[in-house]
Length: 72
View (cartoon, rainbow, N blue to C red):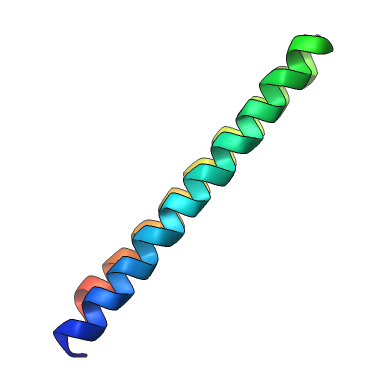
């Protein structure tokens, strides 16, 4: 794979990561807004935990993609 293709792939991955971070931020903002109106503590904690787990999974997947690009 030539350097130009590599740069393009890295750029695409970085854009995807920024997009994922934006979506995550929107979800957390919406969650915090709803949680502020309705305060079911257990549900709120479970939802935040699920979001944290999803974020961790997305980060792992992104690292795998970055590693694959770096190796090529």
